[in-house]
Image (cartoon, rainbow, N blue to C red; front, side, top):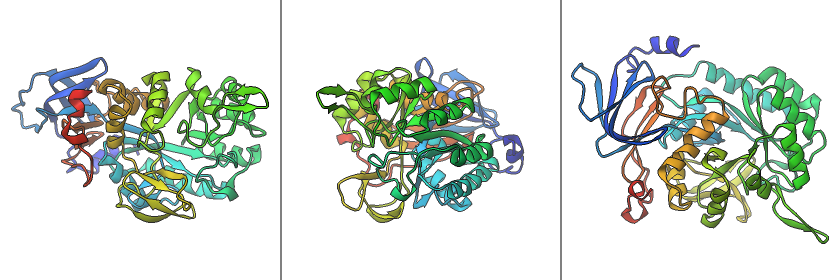
Length: 425
C-alpha cells in the first residue's frame, strides 16, 4: 500500500501536521550545522533552516537545543530483538522487533534469515514481504530480506544450523529468486563452494547484493567472486578465513581480502566483542566510511535482560554485551542496538561523529539503493531522524515523520565515565 494511503488511514498519527525540530546541531551531508532547525511535513523533510526560533503557526515543536540531530540509522543485517525472530515471523513479532530497534535509533532495517531449507525460507520470506507491503506507520521501515546461507562452509558456519548447510544449486535458489527476487536485498554465501560463481552472477543480474560470509575461501576464490559481481562481506573477521600458510606459501583469507579490495564493503558488528577495539581499529584504518556498514547482527535477545534463551535450536547464554553458544567458547550473534554501536565505534574505533554517521546511515542506504530517500538529512528525503543527547543516547526518533518520543537509554548503558562522546568526536 503506498505510504500516502496508509497515512490517510491514520489521521491521528501526526504525519499530516507540520513538525519542527528546533535549534539542534544537525548533521548534514557536508557536516554539522550548529543550532539549526528541521521542518517535517507529510513524512518528509521539508526544509532545513538556520536559527532556533520556533514557528508561530501551530506546528508541533520539538526543542532540540543542546542536542544533536542525526539521520536515522539503517541496519541492513538484523535477526531479531525483544524476544522475537525474523526466522519465525508473525505480524506481532515483527512489530516487537522493529519497536525494540527503534529505541536504538534504527529507522530502516533489512530482516536477516538464518540458513534454512527452501520451503522454510519461502514461508519466512512470504510473511516478511506481506508485512512490509502493508506495514503500519510509526515503525522502522522494513526494506527487504537478508538471506544468510544455506550455502556456507561447514568449517565457518558459526551459529548457523549444520543440518541446513549445502552448496548452491539452481534447483534450490532459482525458485526463491523467481518468487522473492523483488524483496531479497542481500544473499550471503561462501564463494569456494561448487556453483557459487553462477549463483553470484544470478544475484547480480537481479540487482541483489551478493555477500561473502561464513566462508573458508582462499584469496583466489575471493578474487573470482569479485569478478563475478560480489561487493559485500558479511560481518568482517567473524566466521571467515584469515591469513594462513599452505605448506611454505602464505595465503590471505576472506578477511584480509575484504580490507585490501576497494570493491568490497564490509559489515562491522560494533559491540566490542565480535571486533575487539584493536581489530576494529585495524578494519577502520583500511576501509573508508563509504566502504563500511555498521550492523547489529542482533539475535532475538537484543533488548532483553541477561539470561538463557533459545535461538537456532540451541540454548544461548546472553550477557549485557553479547550472546554465547552453548559451549561458551564462541559467539552466537550480538544483542546490539545501533545507538550502542554508534558509541562503540567512536569510543573504541577512534572515528569522528561524521564518519560514524556515514557508516550507520549513508553507506548502508547507498548499498540498499535507497539513498535517494534515506541515509541523510536533506529536503525531500524521508523524515527518518534520531535526536541524541551529549552522550549520544537516544532522546527522540522519527520514522518517516512519525514521532517516537523521549526514548531513554536502557538501564546499564555506559556513559563512558561521564565523558561527552559527542564533544570528543
